[in-house]
Length: 252
Image 1 (cartoon, rainbow, N blue to C red):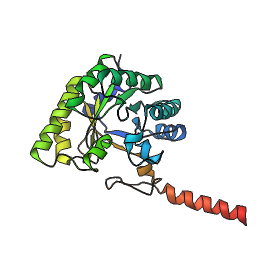
Image 2: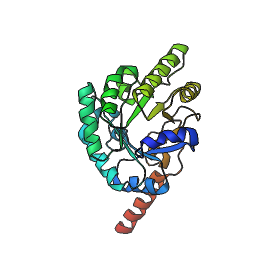
Image 3: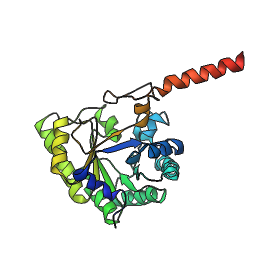
Image 4: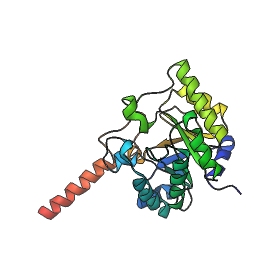
């Protein structure tokens, strides 16, 4: 019997596209679930938008377990994907151990970054019956090594390597693959080629779904917003207004 997360493959053929958002706490997860989001991602992006870190590399397994438990308490419908953080999957054994911890915390699937080089880790996870989501293209956990956030797939060779990564993850049993910050034509070609659902972020519109960091969608993190993220609200401005009004009332 297929689980909720495994059923997402059906959406590749039947549609509609998957709508995915990040969640890091109980009230946000509950609101996103009630609003009809298809998947909730407890992303290690929490390092920046929740914990105030400069990038995702400082996020620990303890952080991910803490926030996954909070999100899982709110879930009633949308499956939860938990990120394996930096250095939590250096070996297949470590990947499986930490994937099991995320599942025990309430995740329905786990995600790690990388393609061909991570196949032994992916096989260990999938072989244990844990639903797996891949992540290729721009890899936030590699941003320090690469010297910044860079669009992927600009050359023929780079596009070929991305396709190899996607095919390898697909054949290893990924039910979905996040395609981050890559040339739209490359993401479209990958989407046509593989069986797993593709979930784009800064990768054009021709994928099987889209994911955004929820604070970017809500405008609640005004200090940085990636160029591809279209805000649908201005929660930061409304928060400032409400708090200033409160302060004025108290101090009047």
